[in-house]
Length: 386
Image (cartoon, rainbow, N blue to C red; front, side, top):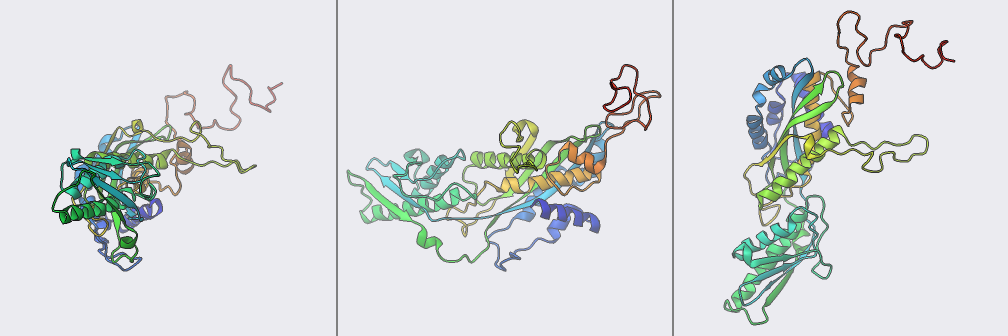
């Protein structure tokens, strides 16, 4: 997405079209790769809502008003998309005669809130209050589940939980609504449901907007403001979804400004092999970051109408930041991260004129043959060095 969305920004400049408007003009209901229609595609809604909230129409005025003799200011935008995956999983639901339910699935909650969300999904499918449902995860003795990755956890595990709950309600209905003293338990496997090919192309979509500052002297890039607007289907738990999207955007900032795998050219070893050398961004690096979702439901992607909401927060952020740096500096960058060194290589060092007789600005070499100032150490190899 960094390359594609940087190219879109460059195309907008070449065509003298606003970058948001260019993306809106080229929106499509059909996947250009497969020819299949999208199950849902609210990218245009994300772009319009984001532009309104971010003050995009005033971006050139904001650049002029917020920039000063110490820093340059720019605003950038990028679209984002992430394919939707569902993998076969199994789940078991147990009902006791006291109206309590236990969902068991060998899924892993890696901090995304899966335990909370699966309990909510089960309660919705069982049509009971959420406090009557307990979700038990993370035990290999439970029915097997797919891995936690590719933004597929909620859609894969949630599908198995919904189908098991539907089967449990049907079984209790066959028993006349009575639950025996030992309870009723039903399991479900989604392998057969997910085997046929898809009729639609299924993706999550989003738009990220970034404001950057570029220090005129050090060439350091900072991101004081970041907004993401996303179309991720039905939002089952707004708190956990927002946390994932905000965290993803901070990871995108890390990709844009910090993270770099540096190899030793002599031995081929990674020099940045621990967190002391491999820098990552934190929330302190983005003072104002927000994520909002447009309303939509996508029952092609899951029976809950939800989509995955993990990686979609990452993929467009770096391009939005790079496009904002271009808006601030007029220079296009093809490589990440956007470190001060990389900006100096493209833009050159900063030269700030000083009063008469002042020493040259940092990074500006003195003219050849200029004697060193009084008290300065001789340069290595000079006649003055013993």
